[in-house]
Image (cartoon, rainbow, N blue to C red; front, side, top):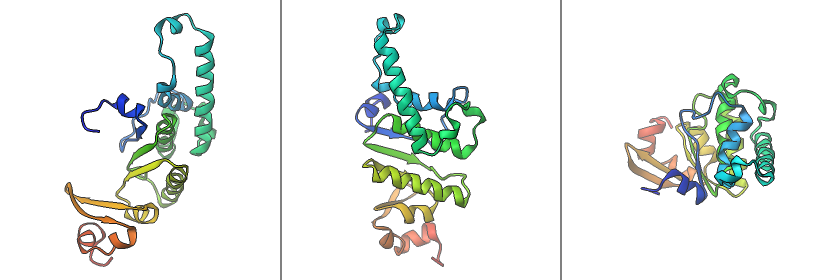
Length: 187
C-alpha cells in the first residue's frame, strides 16, 4: 500500500475512516455518504456538462445506495440533516457509511469508539461485527481494550511501533508484555 495514491487503493477495494472526523459539515448526511461512492460514477466532462440522462440515473442509484447505507449504520433519521448539526456519535457512523459506499473488500476503522460512552461503544461494536459478518475484512485501530478483546478474531499489539504479540484475544490478554503495556498488572 505504501506509495499508492488514495484513489488507487479505493479502486482496489480499500476504504478507511479517520480518528479525527473528516466530514463535510456543510453537506447533508446523505451527500456525505454519496461522496464515498464517487468511484462508481461516470466522470465524463462532456456528459456532465450536457446532463445526460444516464448520469442523472446513476446519481439516483447512488443516492438510493447511500440511503440504504444510512439505514445499515443506524442513521436513517439523519438522512437529510446537515452534517454540522449532527451529534458526534452519528458523525462517526456517517464516516463508516461513507467508507462502505466505496464497496470495499477491506475497511480500516481508526478509533471508531473514540469519545464514546459505554452504550455507544456497545452499539459501534455491533456495527463493526455486522460489517465483518457481511464479508468485509475489518482492520480496527482502537485503544478501547475491552472492545478490542470482545470483537476481534485476531489481534496484533503494537507498543511504540514495535510488535508485542499477535494472536487470539484469549492469548493476547495473557501475554505479560501486553499486560504491562496496556492492561495493567491487575489484569
